[in-house]
Amino acid sequence: MLTDLKKRGLLEDTLVIIGGEFGRTPTVQGTDGRDHSPFGFTMCLAGGGVKGGHIHGATDEYGFHAVQDKVHVHDLHATILHLMGIDHERLTYRYSGRDYRLTDVYGRVVKEIFA
Image (tube, rainbow, N blue to C red; front, side, top):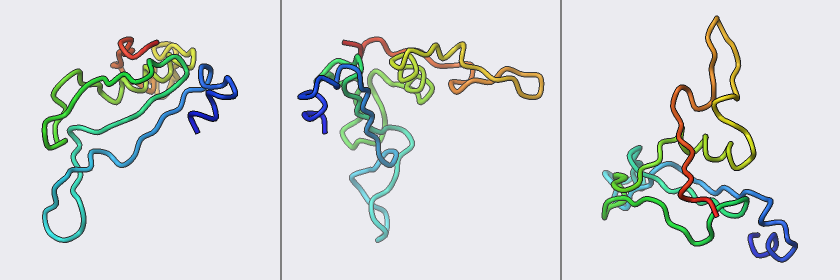
């Protein structure tokens, strides 16, 4: 898919996001398959202004805990919105007398991944 987008000149304008189940661990307790970890998981972003081949962050040796350059889900949302040309702090809606936004009152744009 990425090579096709690149071949057609569309990759630079198309943000591709790949994610799966949160935090699959390499271990299992019991017999029902691998466990889940809410402390570290992987997302892949390509094209759309993201550095190619860049790895941001790391987990421990078991893939259980994020240990380096942690990105909170609010940061991920803020970054994706920024790459789509949307200011996450201005994308708000009023409900019950309070302004709400996708990134709540948090969210840092992770500029280290930009091309």
